[in-house]
Length: 228
Image 1 (cartoon, rainbow, N blue to C red):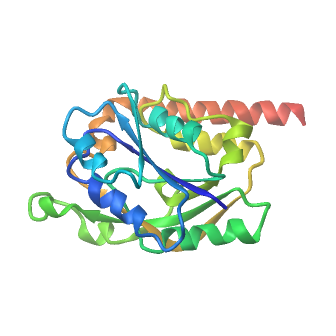
Image 2 (image 1 turned 30 degrees about the vertical axis):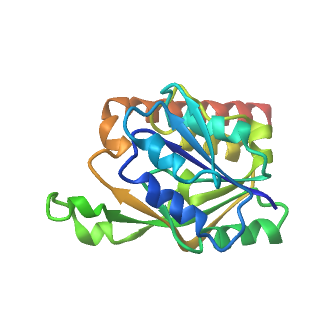
């Protein structure tokens, strides 16, 4: 299996190096690492270029995370897709854990692990958070905790780039409604960074996108029920 790791980034000069390093030190061989610059205006590109020639860098006008991930998938040459957000970190055994179900079961197309959140070091002592809650291991369907056969994108299409939030939830909902098989594992595979520029915090005015995703899912399921 050839694994394509895809890391979209936008103004991520503080965290990108740590994210890329967590990918490059995986114990499982990676066929290619694609860094997608979503129109950054800081020094992110300089950070990305430090990893050449071990990575491939693609650039696009600022179009959002969904468009950047789609761009990466379209240019990827592997048959397995693994995403990472530029402010998060893979565990050392991220790929070892997630690839095993795909290798042992041809009927499984997507595998999810769990994540553990952490407060970015520069914020310790500066923000009020529930540390007990932060330290919990969380499950859920997130791109950075998943590994996906590229054939799934051929079957159901790409992520909806009109969504500012919830684009992966929408995509995964479409995958489930199409009968794609997936597995969820108990192991932590990703550390999710809490910092002042988390996209969920910056784009609260786009929370209506979650309602759009929910409406689309209900509409799809109703259509499927009517066909049965």
